[in-house]
Amino acid sequence: QVQLAESGGGSVQAGGSLRLSCAASGRTFGSYAMGWFRQAPGKEREFVAAISWSVGLSYYKDSVKGRFTISGDNSKNTMYLSMNSLKPEDSAVYYCAARSDPIATIEPENFDYWGQGTQVTVSS
Image 1: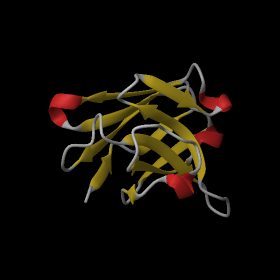
Image 2 (image 1 turned 60 degrees about the vertical axis):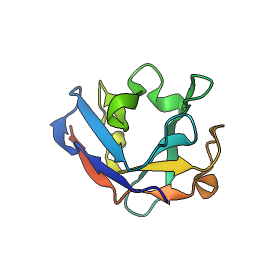
Image 3 (image 1 turned 90 degrees about the horizontal axis):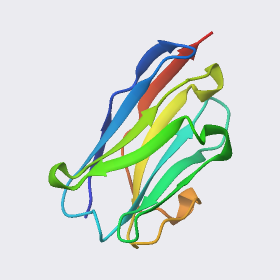
Image 4 (image 1 turned 30 degrees about the vertical axis):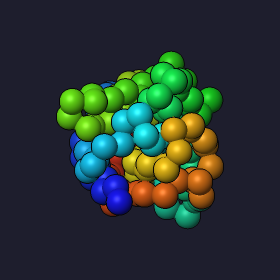
């Protein structure tokens, strides 16, 4: 069983930055792929970024490439999402997720464990 807890959300102006954290219980790095998803009001949950720790590959939604970076600290069992040049359309509840497979995927239905979410609001 894996438990995930996000933190770091908040309200920023367009062009600002935030760093989200996802603290994971148990050993996840290397055994699980992990990712970030987001859901805005009235919209489907969508893929943002994912990482396969075992092979060192990361994947990003096209609209966040060059602005967001997924990373992790194995010693702290914590994953991060660094978000720069934020836009109002990035506003959503952000969720971290873990998949019981070392290979990442972009489909939320393929992730087994989810955090409770953290709100990100970007004002224009």
